[in-house]
Structure formats: structure tokens, C-alpha cells
Image 1 (cartoon, rainbow, N blue to C red):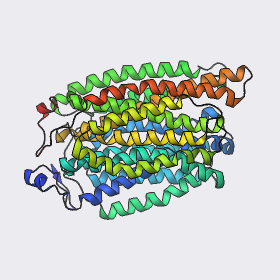
Image 2 (image 1 turned 90 degrees about the horizontal axis):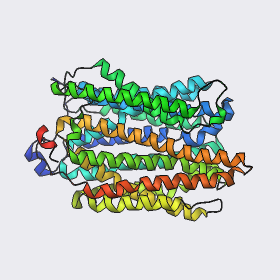
Image 3 (image 1 turned 45 degrees about the vertical axis):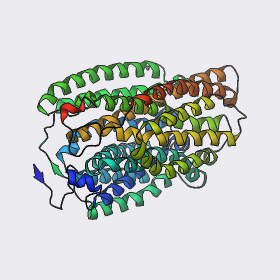
Image 4 (image 1 turned 30 degrees about the vertical axis):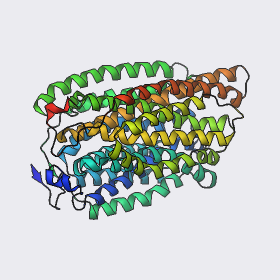
Length: 505
């Protein structure tokens, strides 16, 4: 092992440290810095949904090209995140943070000055490379230095980032696009990223020690094709088939082929990891799934991601195309729920520390499901106040769900698997989000296009499409309602859990 040269923060694995329930010196500063950086990165990720129509017009590109600004971002994230387990073992906290923020900052600058589609797309890919590292780094750092009795309240902060940033993204994007040029979406983020990078370079303290973890190139290739192929293929299902040039495969056909290839590569990737993890050489150690509690929590999180990201992508389209709101108004519909989510996040963590996961997760998943069923009743004349109320209930439910899922899942693992567990959790969340976006947009778009062919207006044709898509999300959301009863709080550990004990959690 190689120790760091700036006074590393040691992991909390000593009984006396846990007994006093205090963070190691400097740990809170590191975690807060990572939280701010993750918030900015995820906020940037979610501003594109409303901005794409403006970009299509300003850059003179067709919708199928504009969709790449989100598809390429998700594709890059899906490729990067599975490698973070290795990255966080091999390099120090400081090195990983600076590399991620440098990539994100460079990508933001490229987007800001981009003269056209190609350069802007390259900038988005560079941004995504940094974003994909940030959340696993944050969660692994938190799990390693925070005593078990305090993890809930800190995970409440993380859940605030996960849920608040995607909800604020459309609001910020709508406000900017209604009064400023689209470049300001990146101009506003850039100085914040630069400040975070400067502060991190000066004040960030390394965490623990690094190991000479081996890098299996074949695993990297298989991972890139598997997760990248699945996410890209799913993104094609939401494309407009009528926009496909003659002689080319339709989006559905292309998506099906790509997803099929991705699934085959995923099977090979899993087989490869099972072999390599016998010698602790896996790129993504899958022994994390030997923990029943971790597996149930990850599945629950994945299904919630399907509903959440699908809804947050579909909702702006419904609000603008069916309800007749402009970009700013559509973004403001999400604002009250976003504010409540931000306020309640830390309190949810305190409740988790005191009561465990079920006190939050059971009512939280029920609120999310009920909100989606309410959305399945919307139409052209649905009152804005009703939409705000439903979104607020859903936001509170998500805030109640994320904190116990993060804490219970990673807390069920031995310390040496925290980085791999975080990588697995974030990968599954990303794939779940891609499934949700693809599924809901495909349903909405197909019914919308069919209605337009029958001579209906966009609003008339889009209303039944939105209802059908939200109903599918509502039915899917019943799965977390059931699984919530089986997620339990791991026993507080005063020292790292043994690998063989993790399977019993």
C-alpha cells in the first residue's frame, strides 16, 4: 500500500472512534466539497431536456441529432461508472476528485464556446466522464469515514443531491432559455465548477490508502460495450421512426439489436468478473450481490430510477406540448417539490438513524406510486395547482426513499467492497434511468404520432400518450412498494464486516 502525502483521513473502523460518534478531523469538509461538486455535475446533466428544442433551432439540426446531447451523456456515464470501483482503489481521493472536476470543467468550457453540433457533443461527453466519477466517489468516501450511527443524516444530504438536482435542472433551464442564450446554461455552471476545483485542489484531504489494484483491459472493453450498448439501444426507442432516412434501420430495430448485443456482452462481463474476483482482481466485484439486503435495495433503487427519470423527462414535454406552458412555467411546476425535497433531505437522514429504513421507505414508495397514478389522469385542461401538488407529493416520497436505500445498501457490505458497491449502485441507477426515459418517451411518442396522423392537434394527441406513459410508470412503481418491506437496517458495525458475513445481511 502507498500512503498519501497530505495527511490522509483514516477510515472509521476502530471501536473507540465509533463509540464517540465523531467524524475524523477534516472529513466533514471533504464530504461537503464532494456534495457540492456532485450537485453541480448532476444539475448540469438535467438541464438538457428543455434545452434540446432550442438547440435544434439555433444549431439547425434535426431532432434525432439533438437527442444525442442527452443520449451521449448517458452513454458515457454508463461506460465510466462501472470502472469507478477500480479507480477509487488505485488512486487517492484527491487525485480522483481533481481528475473528475478537471474533466467536467474542460467539458463545460468546450460546450460554452462550441460553434456547432459536433463540438458541443464532444463537450457533453467530456462533462459526462467527470460526472460519472463524482457520485461513486462521494458515496464511497461517506461510507468509509462516517460512523454507522451517523450515516443516515449524511446520506440524507446525498439523497438531496440525487433528487434535488434533477428537479431543479428543468427550472433553471427554462428560466435561462426564456431570457438568455442557451450558452448561459454552461456559463452559469462554469464559475461554480472552477471554484469547486480550486477549493478541492487546495483543501481536499486524501482518504485512507491506495492499493495496487490490477486493471483487466478485457473487462473494461466488455463493460463499455455492455452498459454502453444497453443505454444507447434503449435511447433509440424514444426516437421518431418517421425521421429515419430511407435505407437506414428504424430506431426500434437499431435499438433492439444494440440492446441484444449489450445483454450478451453483459453476460460475458459478469462471467469475467466472477473469475477475476476469486483473486480480488475484478474490475467490478460482484460479491456485493451476495448480500441480500444490498441486492433488494439496489433493485428497489433501480425501479425507482425507472419511474423518476422517466417521469422527469416526460413531464416537461407534457407540460409544454399538452398543458400549453412555456419552458419557464414548466420548470416552475417542479420548483415547490424541489424546495421541499432539499429541506427534508437531512431530516430524513435523522429519521433513518433513529427508526431504520421501513419508517421512511414504506410510506415513501407509496407516495411515489400514488403520485404516478395521479399523473396518469392528466389531460389538456388539468389545473397547474393540481400538477404542483402531485409533483410535491412525489418529491417528498423520493426524499423518503433515497436515504434509506443508500444507507441500507452500502451499509450491508464489508468496507473493502464499498467502492464496488457504490459503482454497482450507480450503474444500476443509470441503466434504470435509461430504461425509464426510453420506455415512457417511446409510449408517449408512439401515441402522439398516431394521433397526429389521424388529424389531432399536438395537445389532443399528446394527452392520451402522456396518460398511458404515466400509467406504465405507476404500475412499475408498485414493485418498490412491495420490496420496501424487505429492506432492513444493517447491524451497526464497529469494524469492517467480514466478506463471508456480508451474504448474511
